[in-house]
Image (cartoon, rainbow, N blue to C red; front, side):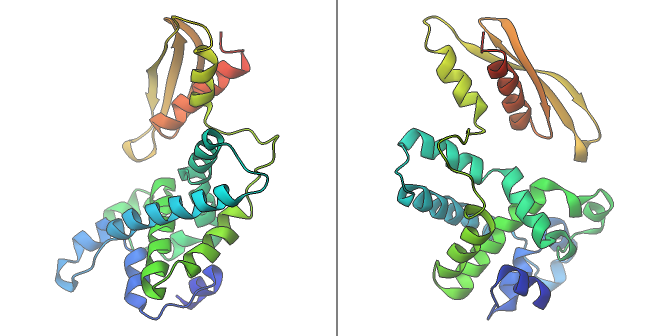
Length: 226
């Protein structure tokens, strides 16, 4: 655990908080006798802390960013893919406590679990230190300092961009439809089609339904949204 503390730049007073932040529900469920708690409650708290710290950073950014753009940038910065990258840099999977079944099905490398664990770690630092200073330092170092927020930076919220483009003309509506699903339950790939007034304008695939919809919207934008 000392190696992980060195990576995140914080030493815990209460190591049990760190252990809980690294404990998946599958591990806790297999060990009722030792009262192990999963990271899920910490992840809930960490999600809010991360959202606040990111919003605060964007609000103070110079030159000032319009509200709509701040909303899209925050969503992009705190998305699963961004948090998964942080987890990979920290090698969080090596410290994770998993149940036997989750271990066999590749849970240690699963992006959704690793992203959640980053949020639980943020909450653990907050509770252990009693302030936002440690989580703020962590979030700024691992996420916000690496962000590209220049005027030329394009938000990855392609669905919102497409919606805004389509609504410039009256009586037009967008619909998304899942047209494909492949892979085992723990590692699925989804394919979605986006249509404008029933006419297909783009398709895309992703590891989650939301990601697939975004990729479909991205293709539609590249084609002009028509």
